[in-house]
Structure formats: C-alpha cells, structure tokens
Length: 157
Image 1 (cartoon, rainbow, N blue to C red):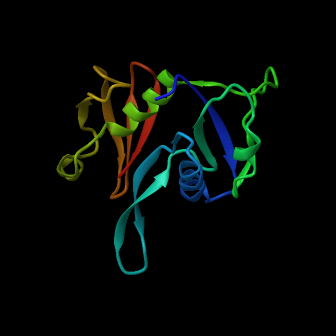
Image 2 (image 1 turned 180 degrees about the vertical axis):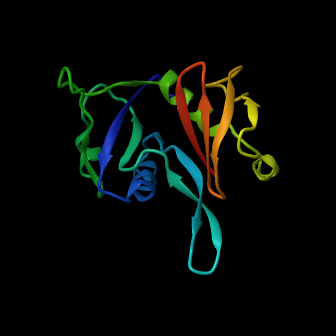
Image 3 (image 1 turned 90 degrees about the vertical axis):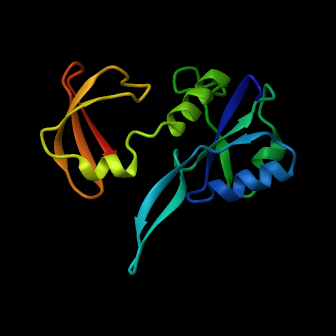
C-alpha cells in the first residue's frame, strides 16, 4: 500500500462504482466496507456497505489529478478545514480502519446469550482490557456502558 493517500468526496451511493472505475483506470483505491444486517420485507440479509458514506481513498500523487476528478461520481478531493490544502491520509491511519473492520465484537452465539446487567471483559483492540455492562439489549443492538471511560457504546448486529 502507498504511504500517503487522499480522500475523495463522491455523489451519494456511488462508492463501489467509483472504486471500480478508478481501479480500471489503474489507480490504487481503498474503499472500507462493513457488513450490516438489513431487513427486507420477507427476510434479513447481510450486505456490504461503505463504512464512510460518500468517501473513498485513492493513492496520493502529491496534487490533484484531473483524470480522477473527471471520473463519473467523483465530486472533489477532500481538503483540510484548517489549512485549505489537500488532505493527506497516512497509510497507518488506513491500517487502523482495516484493523477496526477486521475485529468482531461479538460472535453470533455470544450475542444470543447476553442478558441485561451482564458484565463483559472486552477484547476488541480499541477497548481491550476494559469492562462493560449491558444496559440495553434488543435483537439488533446492544448498549454497553464502559464505566472507566464514562462511555456508552452501541453495537449493532
């Protein structure tokens, strides 16, 4: 993976198509996808959705590339709000996103055995070693209170 990347702002719901178009043009593209459970009228289905809606990452070339901007679905490069310059994303930051997406908070079987008030010892890399208490539980979400941090974490199935 290239060391520096740029973020692109896209038309809504075009992330996968734009990533495909840019890849076909020979650009190195990263589109973080997460699996979500969606309910349709007759069933539940797991689908891949972009983690960051309307954004993808492309390997940096130092400045704006007009060929990338002409790609159907691309609106603009993302700029820093403080400097106004092209935002540069480091490989290490994209690696953190990949690590996050590779973590499973709960296995399906664990989810079914949880009860209100249960205390969990978290192993997820972000909260590793912390304890959390289940304060809300339904078939699609769990709310955990991580008291050490004073933080409520909502986990979706």
